[in-house]
Picture (tube, rainbow, N blue to C red):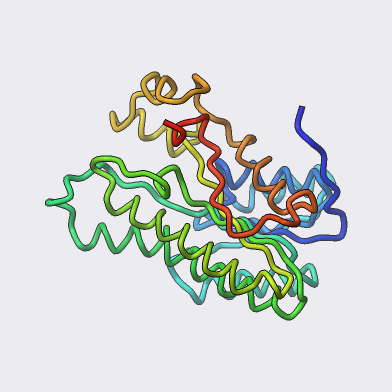
Length: 255
């Protein structure tokens, strides 16, 4: 059984909300009473998800946003505040994965693309979310890092560099804003059953059984389990928690 939260009267923004962990988190925030803004580079996916939430009686807004473009991020945050009047919580989830590449062979273009989405996208999101939260004097931000923000893996140098960067960004911003009423944390998901992981399995980049057996909890995680970690970090139950990179990985990083 998941804990229940009361976010009535609050507003949450989720990037990468069209599917996977972002969509599960948007639904969880809405179920807990929050108005939600669903931002995704796939506008159709964001629109469909938001319409379903509205049909279910929730307040939801769909936004098209490529987080690698700071102007689009700023516009998405501003539109959220214009629509709902405030911004209380954010889950900066949008990210990409690229095929494993030998570190000696990775192209600069691929490296730059990974950093643009997975690191600069979170930097831009945090920056523009903080501008509103700073004025309010309150807020909670959760950034999506990865088990790749805590350990290394062969063939994933660019991805892990970005995800380590997210942890550093989170810690530094948390120290800067803790006294101003804004808490900033990160979740570090393990291998989660999402469309991205499904594509990796289908492409031969990941063996599902081996991934599950590499964790103390002998299965893949679910998007809902990540959502519950995000909601807890945004809740009053975590009001004394900031600057944390929380592994939600079935025990992978405990090895």
